[in-house]
Image (tube, rainbow, N blue to C red; front, top):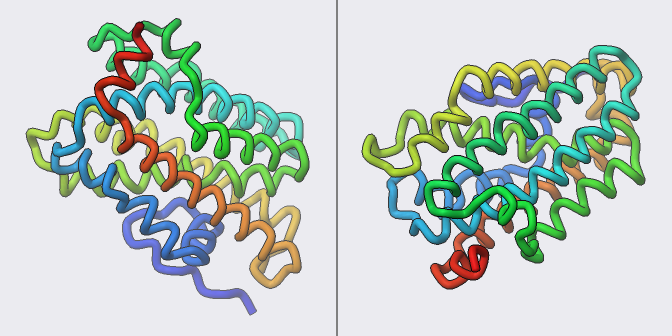
Length: 244
């Protein structure tokens, strides 16, 4: 018998993502309701912390895009290949531009971003995702990639409603709450559902593989929360060190 779809409130990105979220509720809340996120919402996040995060996230997106590229290789259908390719294009040619524009206003150029020294949390997260793709199959890779994609979509949706109107982080919020990003995540969620059903059947949560995939998703979720904490460590001197 198929397990009922967990309540995903307004965040409907497919059955698989809802099941994965429900399988690590505490970790998911620690990630999507992190103090860094709440600081974006009410505008209290120090600017130095935000810039420190942006610099590290730019480096993260480089490796994240490489991981998504592995999805093209491990795909079994043309739809899977196209979705992975569109994800790479979105990260490299669109999402990273938000970082470039914001940092440029602070006199941090793209070359400086590209050559920034990675924090340990960044190294741990990106290499974990890359390892999931190199060591595992398409589903292992998707489970490791999913928390970043859908967490930002959920955070953007929530903050677009609850954030203070005068928060200086409105552009960041609007990027992830916007119809373009949300539409891409709905499409991605549908592809993941079909990829899971193709390989594991209509009741994947009853398969022996499921705990392993759930563990990958939960681990990546914890690494996301650690990435926010790394951002909070950002101080003005660390930002200045990047630009020197």
